[in-house]
Length: 409
Image 1 (cartoon, rainbow, N blue to C red):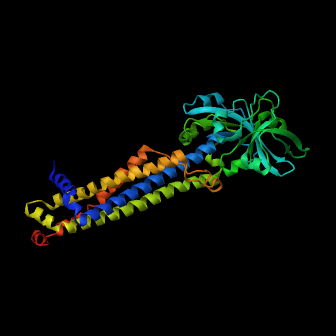
Image 2: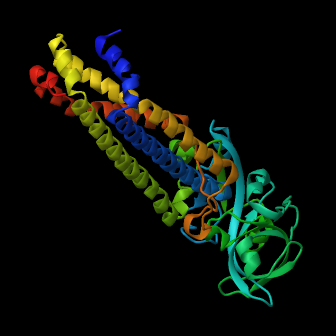
Image 3: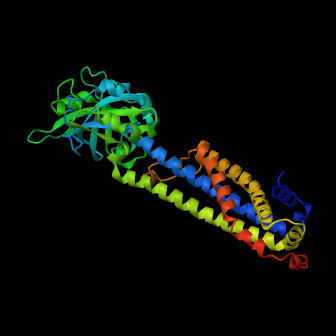
């Protein structure tokens, strides 16, 4: 074993540390490291968790990638999807694609004696992924669409249900208007109520049969307004987007889930800045505290430094000894910080203790993401950067004269 590591371990575990200033210094050093780890873990897990949760909610409702006709533009009344160059079968065969579902949308107004609400009626087909949608349901179910005739069952959001005083099995009249034509009235039965916590979705969307939209939009029985594509992993969106664009034809366009709602995309991007800023601040605090611990330990053990120099130890060996000593002091802080931080994260993950206002944060509880790579990287990163930061202040040792140091006590 090399001398610096051996001697640093000897003084780190020496009984002398329990009866002098070292005890206080070591406690402060470990406490700062533990707090740095706890704050960093919570910041990273909640930041990444929030990004992932919001993206998944957007994607699971409206598709990770959506294909629409260029004639639709930003209108909620979808135009007929062009089949020229569109290869749905090849899209389904892409390795990361889990499912594909067809839809068409039209705007309307739901009204009753209590209130009225402007809606986007999303007509779904028999390929609708009801299992994926199930996580959003707070009551009832989704329409069972066969595309044979008209299914008058619909699923509305909790926001719309509250505004119109609706519950499962109630009926509601919806008015659809087209230019230069008389309004079209439809009576629907509420069979389900959902909640995504995404305000822009919950305020507008109603799920029903696609044949209603075809009739209102004067579409043919086999025509659709768009395609929702779902991946096995939400993180595959950016990777597979170019491959999807090659299979949709030049008269259609593909749109990522987050691009449909720019304000939410901007909100998600803020997390990256906040995570980086908080980790940098905590890292600076930890490094400053550790440097102060090193300097105080050097001053306290000036006599030992002089003795080591007298016995022939070089400045580099003594510097390495004190750097190792300080890093050894940090290890219990790392362990305690990880234990407490992970404990708090797990409590939030399984019990959802901290709640949020979904109107402002798009989720009702603080989501967390336990990423092993991020957890390990935080601890190793703090240990490595602290070790590098200790090199410069450790040069104070070279200024200590052996003769004066021995007389220090």
